[in-house]
Length: 206
Image (cartoon, rainbow, N blue to C red):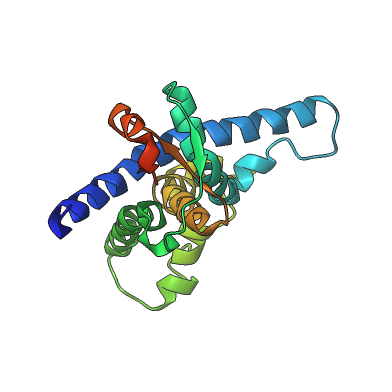
């Protein structure tokens, strides 16, 4: 396989990481939410809105877990056979390690749009001041606080921006970081490769 074909194959796998992340991270976060609700119903001493108020941390942790077990979950949902082999490639060569690139561009767009909507470009906007919530508070605040006195303003303000921009960005950061987790990789063997099993050729899904 020449260099161009290898690059095209790598880019195809890289693009595939986004739907894999979306599906698997959703499943993981639903499981986290279900476990938390069971704890609340069981009488555990935990705040009922804790996950909502810290949903950015949930996105980061859920993305990491999805990155570790995401391939297994994805292939199991599609009823594909799973084989366990070791992959000694550098983590930086795996498409999964670069899943954060597109969401980072989306995050930068959100920040630029936020600055543009302010009508001025004061350095105080980054850290807060007389013009309202700072950029850090808007995109990296304490999440959606359901107990706030002005919930409507929060939903239309920082909560929506964190949901739209910060949440997917942090989730893909965790998903990409999982590529460096020291686990063997899961692969799916195609029929052609099964015919050449004596040569142990497999198609690695990263």
